[in-house]
Image (cartoon, helix red, strand yellow):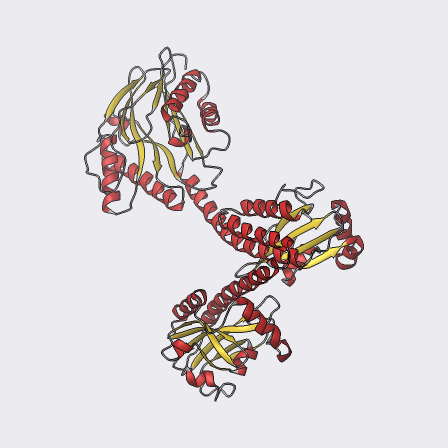
Length: 601
């Protein structure tokens, strides 16, 4: 790779000029960066060393007279103790500096930093503040000449941006802390920032981040609107109501970042933008933006960029219906809240993407039910709404091999719940489901207990750490109805509704699936399914509620099942779910219903 240096590379907006010296030193002081050890900066240095396989890596900041290393790895005493060396002007002003051999490079020969650290190969990526001022660099140092690949430089540049984001957040936090002591009003605003850091740390989805930000800002700063506009969306969002004040939910003609509008400018230019009045909007953004401004009824708006570790995600927009020019305290609050929101959004968008992939995987594994003459079936799966997670609940039904020739079981049916509400649980669920199917097909006529035994043996041998419960059943056609053979591994009992009789619980069960339990612990049980009967298999999300007795809930479910004897199964499974768990269940719910048609069926 060619050697390079100079401003405008690696995310820096330019090299630091001498007339910016006092501002740069003040920023370093506000960030708390000096020759004192800094655990966070040490962590960045260690990651850099591992990333490009060099013996020495530094987070270096340029003071008035020397370089300090708040972050370092690989230095030996005495440098590892004093954490500083002489000032290298070229390193300070260059911003990005990639050198094959500093010992022969004319820009760096004779510099104290090069001689004291025994530098040969050198890659320095700039650490800039929110104004683009170079505060220092993330340095990777090799004791031998080094050809730096494009991939290595790109990886270091990404890491340097993450490190710079941490420094910028420290600077913002320090400024807020200084503002807190000025007036009681500023103190109250600082408390808002602290609440934002706590609240946003627990968010798990982009929608939740929007809601929390809108709730925090509207409650404390009392604007008429607060919302987040994200760069990948063509929908302007209000974080509190999901709509703009004029009732607009979406406007396909308006991209909140690309279209001329204050949020777009804040995101593109990576700075806070304030606008007041229709005349200013028309002059800055055009007639269409001015018409929209008047429709929304705004008098003032402030937009703060949502600066993530790798890119600007969008902007935080706050607007007032009366002219309002935020003071320094309010701007500090908005800047800090935007910083916390950006971090929370990065995490939430990543989690949302992973959840979406896992949900698609989970949906793909819940295949369509087979068609079996003389038997009706319906199934339902509904994920937990409140936590927006995937989980290990599943249902399955499939034809068994060789049934027509042997007169044996025709259908296998399963309901199961692998412990957990995450991607791992969904993955284990898919493995367990496939292994159980394979066990039935590899051991025809062996029965459901043998299949569960084979599943337990396989997951234990492979050390999958699978824990959970299930009911696995085989159904065999008889002259009158069907015969159910099942084994229950610690799962809620199946319910059997027979016309003219109370709903019955099939309570027989054995131990749950758990690593290390002895093999051979599952038994089989048999039960005739007469014409007109309905069998319901379900997971605990349908009947388990905080503060409610689960036995009473199962009894209530049985009553509803018996009452729905004449209801089509697809509608019945939906009605049971809504009656027992509500429209938005707190836990994952899976149901599998099987019905033997009556004489007229």
